[in-house]
Length: 359
Ligand SMILES: [Zn+2]
Image (cartoon, rainbow, N blue to C red):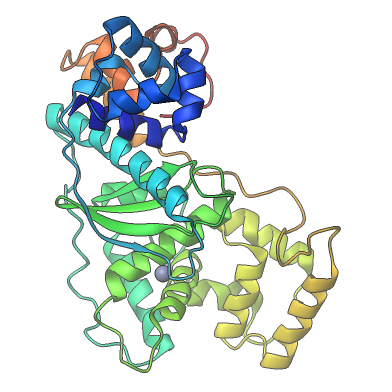
């Protein structure tokens, strides 16, 4: 078991045998032997291994509890097997910490995700998908306005959101999986916020559309439609853009993006899907976007400030709550958040208060 954990920790940290060997001053062969349990690391070596992997020593002795099943990478994912392994190892490791935390503190949200009960049974058209998105919004009491923190909202509804830095140079496109009884959605940690949000909403689409789509509908396309409709509902799009337009100003799209966390390209799709732009008008926008920008066109890299990344707050907030209620000690809290004890103490004193959300 110790060997498996060393390997899992190494993979989750994105280190090769050689990388890790270099960091701890041993040979790759020695590390390989630890992993195959042909050699037992000394406690001093374990400390160094833990430091290199950015985990606490306790990590090596924790029983792995996560079984990931029904893993569905988005179909066009071009992740290599190696990158996929790294991403999954990281997801498992983060989930273990979540489950450990939930075991000590009673959470106020459901532990399993259940799709809203009044969803449409069979969806025959992409317009029906819009209705489905509106229903989820209504059940989640989101109104029709912009969704401020989609990650926190999804977690409140029983979906675990995991951020991973292992996206194989941005080739990874998000995934939804079952882990024990939990529903897990994974997105890239370093993506701009609008991409994170669209992917989260797309994966939510899989959760509420799967098995309900008529055979004539393509699930990926339906999930994209769902994501757009969920982030910017039809009624609001028509109110903000008007019923019929021939041209949308880039600055107009940019302001909408800032407000709604849906990309400028996403807004053009919305306008096209809802008939605000006809086919020819939408084409003019795509052509224009494909001609703008230096190096990368506006289709690939939109102008202006990127939309800020989302930062999930629930996990850390729960750790501090557990600390406050003496349900866990400081070293357990540091372990759960994957940070040094000294850093945790500084945070508790409210000095060195840096950006939250980096567990
Ligand atoms: Zn998909």
